[in-house]
Image 1: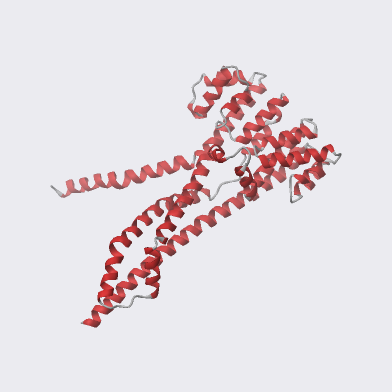
Image 2: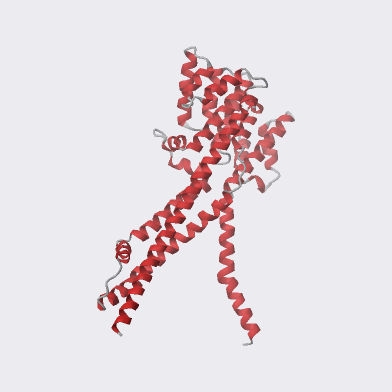
Length: 386
């Protein structure tokens, strides 16, 4: 075989074993990590479709059926399931309730609230407020760090297992036969290795990252599988997570502002705004606000029951005296909530990924130090015996 043929043969197998798996993994990671953004884009496309036909004075249900006849794949398969429910006689809200995975839960709740009011136009601004996101500048880097860790953790577990089964016992036998005293650090690492602490740590890292990735990729539809009817554990956790709480406050405030601008009575506006969050904790707090309103408390004072910090109180108090409507007056607060939520989420993500990278590096460093330390002691023992 000539040198050129050998080069082509090697290039072929390099592409088969290196380029194709690496390219396939990159494509898979891009597909999975971009799922949340594609869901958001489909929701925005659907809102644009609804708004366009409402401006023409056409029925939304008939418009959805007409749009489904075009067989456009960009909007997703679940859109056609919603259209099929509407074609079978369901209203928009009923169809969205039967296919809850088509739109985010909050958008579903807001659209159903708008249908109850008899005017979807009023709630479309609130839907767009919910889907509005802060500028994304560093999230893609975090995605790649998580993807690298997801690959590194199983590989590290496999290598540590191989070392503990085939390499470390042989080194121990040689050291014991030569009566060589092993470094205390090496003894400590080998004991950790024998008790499977290092492998357990790597597997814990892997399972943690898989859980986080599943929650991010699966979105609200995946998380709702773990929701209990009597104990809304998922909603409770969402309210306790700082950035999730700010997004829920933004949703409640935006929907309340839209409804108040539309002339909806305060108690009904608070109830619908609580329902639009699709969160049981927010609904219960909205009920406390309604109870305060029924006792004669003003709305800007009653909302103290919804927000423990009291910021919503004075924001709404200032909005009552501003011009241009509640939504316009509260837009600055909504943007501030978005910015704070984005900052907190990015900070938590970077702390998690950076911490895991450092801990993985520490594990590798300990193993490398123990192994090379044992090799040094063995070499010293060999030289001393000569």
